[in-house]
Image (cartoon, rainbow, N blue to C red; front, side, top):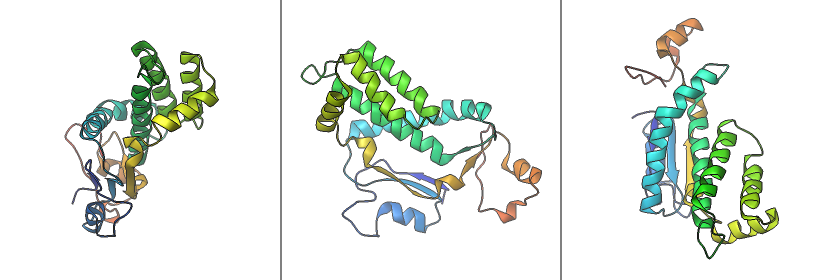
Length: 203
């Protein structure tokens, strides 16, 4: 069983179901981190999410590893950042409707970029900054924007995902895992396991 399993289908960890879910089965078989869904999700949104997550793995992780002080990134950070960015993207797409707020494509791109930067920088107030930015772009108060979002985007598909297991235990490093463990005086037999790729990064 791979240490990381990602499900992008309906009800893989249903909020109204039992412990016998698909996501729990993956954990029982030895997965360390499982991304499941608590509700039905849209096929288009699921496809977009998977594509963005693949892009994030390819593009974000190498950049994060170069900028981080501890030379590692946890899988939890990768997924949580992706879910937040996808959440803001879904909100903005709905606010583009002329009957809601009529945000232009240019405004959406600028607000999304600012949100992505704030999320990837792990700012605690990223969502408050996102609301203020939307309010500035559409010329309305933050209170009005908050009400509109609650009415038209109160439950995005990004909010239906749940990260199970111990994703914070999966550290992604730029070097071969065995070399990292050796520097810390840890033998590989003392760890749960690792998965390596020919050209890194490694988890």
